[in-house]
Amino acid sequence: MTDHRTPGSEPAGRPRPDGGRGFGTRCVHAGQAGPDPATGARAPPIYQTTSYVFEDADHAADLYALEAEGDVYSRFDNPTVATLERRLASLEGGTAAVATGSGMAALDAATSILAGAGDNVVSASSIYGGTHTYLATMAERRGVEARFVDTLDPDAYAAAIDDETAYVHCETIGNPSLVVPDLEGIAAVAHERDVPLLVDNTFATPALCRPLDHGADLVWESTTKWLHGSGTTVGGVLVDGGSFPWADHPEKFPELGGESPAFEGTSFAERFGDRAFAVAARHRAVRTLGDGQKPFDAWTTLQGTETLALRMERHCENAATVAAFLADHEAVAWVTYPGLEGHETHETAAEYLEGGFGGMLTFGLTGGYDAAVRVCEATDLAQFLANVGDAKTLVTHPASTTHAQLSEAEQRASGVSPDLVRLSVGIEDPDDILADLAAAIDAATGAGAGGAGPGSKDNGETGDDAAGTSDTRGAD
Image (cartoon, rainbow, N blue to C red):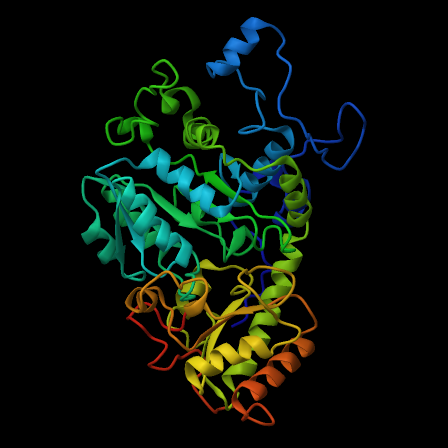
């Protein structure tokens, strides 16, 4: 279960961006060339402004026609936000990025650019409940069909893709299942059919995995979670990998490879090259929909990214400790954590995740649904709320919260069983996290003194009640 590389470390042979600086250095410095030229301030300034003065009428016209680059209006571009975008593009290994008001806004922007009425999206089934609901209801209302497939089977994706598939979608670490799919296998079947792969990297963050290095074309994340890390600021990001040949498919991707109806026949692929998707997402989605990230939110997220590598190391260490504790507890029916050798995708996780297996785990108690609800109510240190990726340990019951909009069958297909408890392990002292969980489990089940000792159950294996389908063993 141990990976001796620290989170964010690049394996030997991988080229480093930003002049060869390491991941931890880029967490602190990427995106900001130096001190503010006007004042000498070293911290990135907050440009709390709506708009920017034009040099003259020609300059204004050029900006609006995308003939020149510069800031126009903070609904879709802002210098503070641009600093965050450059940093996140660097951390993910992308060519450019667009920061949005939330993670879901990033997904919506991507879908708006890539899909139209009559198209379909092929997605892993083990995904965040909000993403499932968006694809199955909101996208469907726009005439975009959602096709959910076995998360771990590249052949299932291949069978679902057809000429109308706009993109393939999966998560680096499935939410809620905590399974790690074969990114390179899925990318291969998508690319064989001229379809881009969009990956949600929220649960891994670029500290543990950079999907663009494994065949993904586009990445999106909720910056609300580990990237920011303090539970105070909602945000999202789209990162362009610069790898997909949009210009080769003008009819399939008219917003990218074709002539844009909004900019006098401009082809984003021809004009902007490997930044085409990011520029189109900014000017054809975020600009129109108004869901760009705000400068103060970007500024606070920049502060969070500075400690990302350090925090992820602690999150991973603490989660591994908690997983081992729960696996040996007499009142715990099952526990799922990719770092446990018994986890169904442990070997795949070890291949794709660098420096740890993430800060999330799930478990079920012998008391089933009622015990799951009670343990969430009984924790003291762990906070009962609907978020993950905070410095604080967080707990919730997805069947009645994050995935409540799904039917029971849809919940199980996404990896949510009725007894599932989701735990986002924070960076507190591990002994305090364990003591809090032991007391809460005792209160919820009457288990008494706690763990039953080593060997009481198979590490990483979930019970039958937790395994909704073949690809959803023990869900988040």
